[in-house]
Image: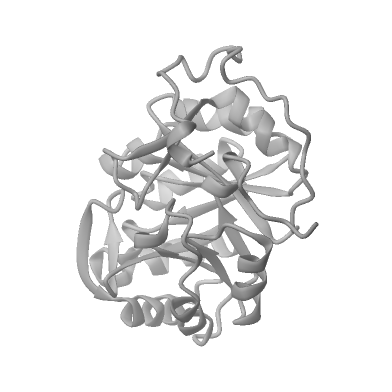
Length: 261
């Protein structure tokens, strides 16, 4: 099936699992370096193409999506509150509910984190890591340094790249900060880990931007790859240039992730 064939009518995403979204397939064997992604829009789990809010290619009730992710048997999931990313406001009630649904899978959460207090509130709500993009590159890196000093390993900085520049605010805004400058700011602030996304490839099932990821790894920080990863071969390709893990959304959730036979 194509991703478009997975689009379903809107449902009350945080309620009980609907029959339409019920999970019946058995869990595949997934590379342990994979981090499944759950993107939340309203109260549904969705996938967008290239981060465009007008291009929803797949949707599912949140409990069903959480059940599917748990079935993969992987230790961490990457949960993005897309509404929070756009508005700059975290949704603690939603995060708490999703953390409970995904347990025992650990949750790395992103979206709407604009301050240290936001990050601490999400960790208190049960997240094991917070992934921060917009705030990290505001105020000439001052917020980034503050967050790094307080959060340490619990902080992942999202370096989301479109046309060589950092994209922020749910990828609806483009900064003047180059990819290289963003990585330099992370190194200078003592950041422990970055997640590097090639925005144009996200949700597009076209393979990762291995060149971009190799350049990210050259800065010496642990790197999580994102954007376009669709198979175990892609995971191997990003690992070969130094990435420690890969976030995978569309390919996993639509059942199209290609694992070795």
